[in-house]
Amino acid sequence: MTYSQNIQMILNEIASALDSVDKTQTERLIDDILSSDKVFLTGVGRVMLSLEAFAKRLGHLGIDAHCVGDITEPAMTDKSLLIVGSGSGCSIVPVAIAKKAKKIGGKVVHIGSNPSGDIKEYADYMVRIPVQTKLYLEDEVKSCQPMTSLFEQSLLIFGDAVAMQIIEQKNIEMDKLWMFHANLE
Image 1: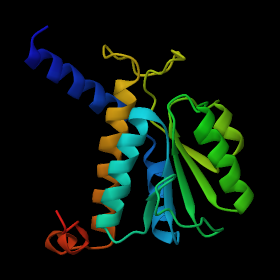
Image 2 (image 1 turned 30 degrees about the vertical axis):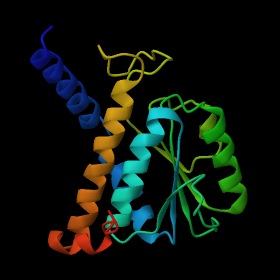
Image 3 (image 1 turned 180 degrees about the vertical axis):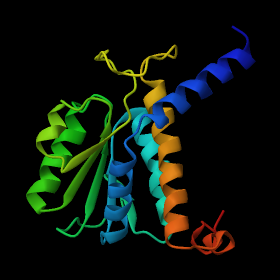
């Protein structure tokens, strides 16, 4: 395949994956983000990179968002939300963090592909991006890309789509967002 064909294939896969996300669960996530005192995000590997971008964007919207493990991470409370990204829902560290968040009394949302993963025990609900994982479940959106690339890409775009919905819902003027942007660069 040519470079252009690969780009089109990747974009088609992302569109297919994100079109399959339950819009009701997405709205529920937005409501929880907006009603929480703090939003925490956790995952591992490339998933965490996508979540870091989502946390940064939430910060641009004036939402108190933090990645678990950052040196400036504050304490979670029972008024906080933990967003766990894990395609399989079985990654050891995110599952352990979800367990701890539930013990604190916070709300836990799993964004992933496998609805039967270990995190199910601790998540209040799941926003499913039904993409191919290492489990190769029958109803997953198949991908020609290596490993779980489609999940990580879809998660990144999902975060930006959620941010755009928050901007619309809060009636935020785009030019006002710059006051939350880093300015020491």
